[in-house]
Length: 212
Ligand code: SF4
Image (cartoon, rainbow, N blue to C red; front, side, top):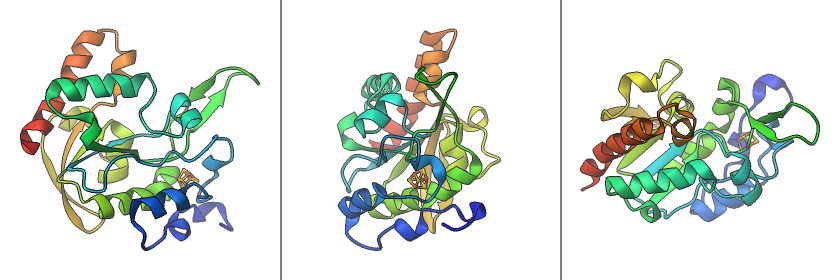
């Protein structure tokens, strides 16, 4: 990476070797500056033959420490919602649009506060998501929130307009079926948590119907 406008993971992505090779290579990705402050790369997890891929925004504080996606409070809520909708969380491939945790601190040594990745960082990290899609070839992608939607479907994506619907789009040269919904962390922040949770489960039920 020689100049700021050349942020991309592309040179780090191996052409073969499946998910194990991708995961190993992603651990050393320097495709954008986010690797500098984060603890580690948090790559996707799940089987290469998973029928459904869940795509979130980026790892959170817990994910960054543990090196696994969706292990924090939002991930636990997501697992519960998936199970309630009829999707076994253990059978899904889970990943994020951006593989390093982006955060700010109000003061040194204080709690790390999540910061949304920029379009440029999302674009830089895109080759990892494209490689995961090419290996897993899911029957369905569940898009969790605005950042994942923008990374997959472009910057005009609005989760409120399309949540719970079934979309068909060309993504990285493949026709993909997608069901967008909110990110589970937005349920945790909602004033009416129960209503927000019910909305998430309802969207996931649409995904479950497609997979049944
Ligand atoms: S966020 Fe993505 S592109 Fe940037 S360093 Fe991490 S893995 Fe590489």
